[in-house]
Structure formats: C-alpha cells, structure tokens
Length: 350
Image (cartoon, rainbow, N blue to C red):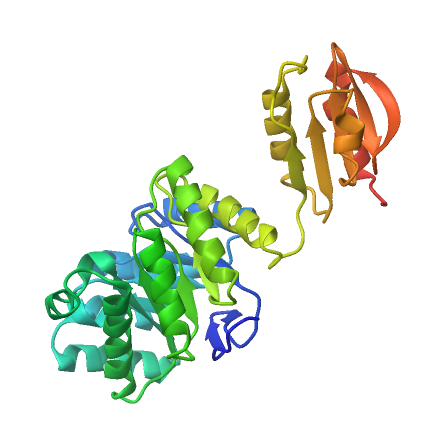
C-alpha cells in the first residue's frame, strides 16, 4: 500500500497524492553550456526521464536556465548549494522547482528570501539532507551518522521552512549506506505527508551503483514509500533512466516497455547468447509494447523455458527457433533470428 502524501506540482508533472512514481535524473554538463545541456536533456527525455535537475553554481548558470527552459519540455529543477542569490535567480528565470539544503544556505534571512521567492511563484522546494553533511550536533547526539539523525535533520529543516509560511515541499534523505537509507525512509514515512524523493546517493559505477540502487529502492518502494526516484550512477545519465524504469517495472509499479528475459549460458549453448541478448535488449528499447521477450541459448529446453514469455527466440548450432507463447513458430538460420524477432514485434497483435 502506497503511503499517503500530498500532491506537489513540478512544471507539467505532479508527484505525490497517489500519482505514479516519476523518474528523475541530473545533467552532468556545464549548465552554462546551453546547447550541451539541452542536448543531454533531450536524450534523457527520449529515454523516459520525467523530471531533470541541473546544477546552478554560478549566476551564468542561472541565466542559462531561462534559455534551457525555452528549448525543453521536461520540468527543470535547479540544484543550489550555499548561495541563496542563485536560488532566487533560478526561480526568477523559470526553474520549476529548486533543491536546497537550508543548513548550507546560511542565515535565517537568506533562507526566508528564498522561501518568499518560491512562494511568490508557487515553486516547490526540495529539502535535501545527505548523510555526508549531517549537522555536527546530530552526529554527536546519535554517536555517528544514523538513520534517526538523517530523519531528525530533514524534519528540522522542513519545520524551518514551514515556520516561514510555506509548505510546498518535497523531502529527500539520502545516504550511500543502503540499509541506513532504507531505515531512514521507513522512519520518516510515518512522520510527514510531504512527497519523498528517493535514491541511494553516490551509489557508484554502473555495476555497483545499479546493485545498490536496486536493493535500496526495491526495499523502500515495495513498502509503498516514495513518490519520485533517481538512480545515481557514475556514468551517462541515460543509464540512470534505463535502470529506474526497470526497477519500477520489476516491482510492478510501472507498465509498458518490453521486458527481456534471457537464460544464463551453459555448456549446451552453441550461439553467442550474450551478444544476442544484448542486441535484443537494445533493439526493443524503441518498441512501445508491454510484453515479455525471451532469449534462450538452447533449442532443447528453450521453448519450455520461454513459455511464460509472449515471444522468444532460442538458438542452436547455426540455427534457432522463433517461439510464440511457448510454441515453435518456425526454424531459422542463426543470422535471421534477430530480424525475424523484430519483424514479429513490429507487427505484434498478441
């Protein structure tokens, strides 16, 4: 059961309030480089990204947001650290949301100025707390960085903004410690109705980052906690979107898109199963079907193992089978398997 949170509008999207969980990423271009940033956002959108965040470390970057906004369709979130003037400038230039850590913005008057600017334009504020920047007092109170400390920090920062007369907020509490992050979300879910942005921060490279994110996000989302997610990977941000979509589909939280299942290689495998499976996964990325495709490396067990898939291929020695709902449709030379599968998918009617 999904936890109940308030709906928050971010540009032309809405998170919380029972709406579907949305996928985010962050550009890694220099925001000041409008052309490069727009190009990357368009690639992210094509991959399935629904909200994008850009860092705003300079006034030039804030100025660039206005031009970036004109050229992209995705809601754009401005990521701000330390300088409250950059937050205000980003809001004035059309940011759909800002991400701040009130603790590093400075004096109350500066935070209030940011809150007032956001309130004037109805722009939500994402209050971000990270295990790497937990306040010294809370580290001492809990004898180290803990889930309880993260939650207390986040709720204190949220109250700080609420006391300034604004509650259009999104909360993120992130840690690179997967189980700490899971526990923090379990604790905070019962203490706030603000939407939660979920992710495992600094998760790592494509392999380790995907494993950590899948485990952490899986444990959190399966409990009905979370309204928008980001898979943080050291690599091309487009990979974050692919991973996020697969995590949501695996948990049954999102429909659409072809799911590819493939068997592990074994001594019976007589074809390049690894290469074939990768080619199939790449090929189906642009086909808008909600079905399961199997790629099997053995014509002996392939049809039986693929019977739960809608369609599949099984390879043998220089040849293979095209399979539909577990039944053999035809036998083909190995080099024709991929084209035959694509042709079937392009004319798929179930």
